[in-house]
Structures are given as structure tokens and as C-alpha cells.
Length: 295
Image (cartoon, rainbow, N blue to C red; front, side):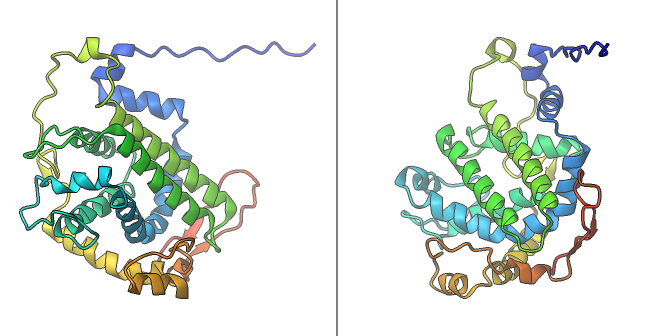
């Protein structure tokens, strides 16, 4: 007689806590998405891949945002942390765009830090808050349709680049794409929590404490001058390696990416000393023996 199988015990989730406790919300999302140790390991060992892609991702995102007047007009509003000159009709070389690119690079670098720390998710939550205009000297509310579309572009570019990498083991590609997808969808939720009205009966009149200004978290600058300089230097170096194909180099020199050309076709050259062990077990992603890309 076959053993009797019982359904898993149904977990209880306190609805109020999802709207009043960020930690409870993150725990629920981690559980629902099965975000666990394997995802953390994939993100940690794959962070070098992601960081090598950051300059190209930033350029693609801002090309897209400046392609439409409805998204470009957001950059005609002064940013809290930017006091320099502003172009009335911004392009990729406008001072305010170069400034915002610096923040997007810093954001993408933050995705490469330790997701086991609550501060990681607090930062993602604050990113969502700032786009509603809260905590900004010059309030700017970005409508959610553009937020969702922007996240989709980031995920699409990262997914294509990782899956098309010529030297990365398929199991590692799958693990990294899955882990990144979970993080991006949790980020999506941490945007929507500031936009939708679900749970208002719990949060109406709720004191969210001190709202720190843009670029600050727990009294610390998220991006200081030294980090900004380092990020810009990495951008220049990574641009050289991330556009290694002749077509991509040509598009870079002309200031535009050629349509249909993947900007990551030459990135393997920057990862020549990366070694990934074969998957002998047939199941779990292989451990990276070394995960060091050229600086």
C-alpha cells in the first residue's frame, strides 16, 4: 500500500505586517519566490559578470528614456543632488543626464552587494520611495508605467548578455538569470508599494519616521564623491571591454549603438581568466573556481 501523502502545512501570513513592516514583506517575498542560499551564491559568484555589464546597461537605459518625450521630460526637473547647468532639451551628453547615469551605475552596483543584509532591501525600498517625490527637494513623481518598463529593459538586457556569454556554464547562466529575476521582481514590488493603495487601512496616517534625502540611507551617503569617481573610471574601462566587436566599437565611436548589435559581444575578452568547473552532479549549479574578471 502506497504511503499516505499529506499536503504541506499552509503558512499563515499576517496581512497587516506586509504593509507596516518592510522586513515582514521581504520575508514573505523571499518565501514565495523561493529566494534562498542558491540565489545568494549565484549573485555573489556572478557579481563580476554583472558589474562588467553596468556601463552598457546604463547607456541602453538612457537611450531608451530619451527616445520618448514622456520619459525625457522627467530630466527637465532638477534633481535634488545636482546643482550644475541643465539643458532644456536633454540628450545623452547633457549635464543632468550624465549625473543621473552616475546614480544608475551606483544602483546597479548595489545589486551586486550582499542580499542577505536587510540594508540591501531597505535601499531598494528607498529607490521606490524617491520616484514618488517623497524626500526630494524638488519633488518629482514618475508614473509607474515608466518604472515597470524601465525595469523590464534592465532585466531584458542583463538576461540576453548572461545567456549569450560564450564561456559560462549553462547551469551557472540559469542560476544567475533566475536570481537576478527574483531581485528585480522584488524591486518591482518595492516600487509598487509606494504607488498602489492596497493596505491603506493600515498605513493611513502612519509615521514612516525621518525621510532622508536622496542619496542617503541610515545617515550614510549611498554614493560619495570617491565612489562616484571610481564608478566613472570603471565605466570607461568597462565600456572598452563591453564593446569589443568591430560593429559595437564603431557604434561607440559614433555615439550610438547600432540597431541589432549586441553591445556585449566582445565582453568575453575581459573574462579570459575566469574558470568555471563542470557540473558533475547534474543538479546544483557548479561552483566557480575563480570568479575574477579583468579590472
